[in-house]
Length: 521
Image (cartoon, rainbow, N blue to C red; front, side, top):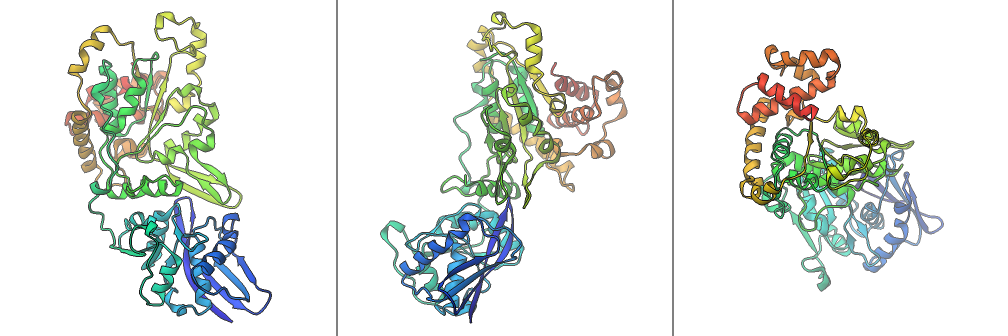
């Protein structure tokens, strides 16, 4: 019996685990038998691998081939195992020494002509391989830049199975088709986390906070949200600037640090949404699903073996904007409560459980009534209808919102003159960066990045403001206007206001202003 093995990676969410791919050629009925809980796409690898091997000039064994994916109890999905299966099979067929591929991780889908095609989720797969101690990873050439972001791993990009086999035989690389645009193979230098700007997406340069006319109070609230990572609700009549403000919140946020950029990129890699030619995402993402989105689209979901991240995870370390938020289904909005508290989404199925990071800034926008009259005076909705409309945003959800701002209609004077006085995104972003730097130094030895991340128990133990600063909240706590969770929200915002003001701790002034922002007055 001829036997050879190599390695691949099985992904579940953004977490990966190494899989041993073993191929054994024995006497028996010719054919390829795949074992180890493969899904439909992986079962179809039989036909792709056979055609790719034959079209690469190699021999297909006219005997029985068994390919085992170990651990056998772990579900495997997708076409990313194609390359590992083909290499293990050729190693068992003595196409090259079996030990040439034994310790290497292989990731890639095979075309029928033998080309190695890109797959989704390469970055988290290479991260998992590095964490498991793998030293060399082979990926599709199209995924090379993404895979090379992982430090400490030798990454090789190949365009074809023929080129990979030549490498394993220690032979000269074959010439590839002109349509391949370059060499048949390329080896990446391991990334050390430098040069982030060179690999970044362009900042949303077409949007600027100075474009918003009027709404000085709302622009201030937006600055507070950006400085502390606080959730925000904007209410007001149509045309008052809610959407314009929301779209400009990302322009106030600082670039992601290296660890956060890898987290965000890994999620978008799994979802198959990385920008072409720009593998590392360092700008905070902005995700704005339509109000008809389902619960699975918002928080993630799928079948047992194909669990995909939702909008809350695609907005990780960035902004999730829900325009016309009362129009979302009640169950969809309430599904946000867990990620808002935990910073992650846990999707459980009968055969698997996937976890996706989901620490984002939630920005809700809502009209005052269902008729959406452009002028308040033109609205014919009775007060009870307006109350029912805004009541679609449940109390538990609103209790998790740090900042609330009620926008008014913009006056003629503001439309004419305010554009000259409004600050640009760059100016506000500088103040946000200074405030975040103060918070970062205060939280330097702790696992949190912003004031909004600090849990309530730590606010009360380690970051409690002076008692005299909180005295004004005794009345609202006593009469029920402020809940215990709301108190934590107010204290977090007070710390952000203190950071923006350059103070070492919140005073009564910051606490009072924070309470007003939480109430929406």
